[in-house]
Each structure stands twice: as structure tokens, then as C-alpha cells.
Image (cartoon, rainbow, N blue to C red):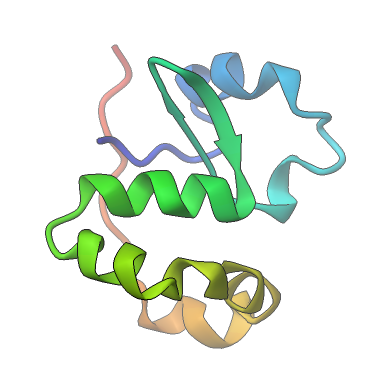
Length: 87
């Protein structure tokens, strides 16, 4: 799994099907089956994380809409990691 900023060329390629005016409103995740957004993307991400199965089993992934609405409160607690290299 790789986190990409919206302006990364790889992310732009993946997200070209998402209208630009709504692209930043949600989290997106892509795998071999295609692109998922919002709650479905969060569910997909959790399937890849250690311990994510617990959150899936409890249904906590459905909290994504609340998380999305409260980004400004949550953002300061998310570490600013270095960008992945462009390949």
C-alpha cells in the first residue's frame, strides 16, 4: 500500500475518472479491482492494515463520513511523512 498526495502523477492518473471539483472531498483507494472512494475506500484500506480486520468486524469503518467532516480537528494528529518517490 502506498499513500500518494493528490498532485502526484500516479495519483492523478488513478483519479482522472473522479471529477476534479470533488476529488479532495474524500479518500480514494485503488487495487486490482478498481477505484473506491469514501467509506468503501476506507474499508479497502483497513483490509490492508494490521489490526484493520478488527475495525472491519466491528463496523467502525462506517465512521469515515464523520472523520471526513472533521479533518481539521484530526489533521494535527496525523504525522507528516516524506513523499514516496515518483517511479
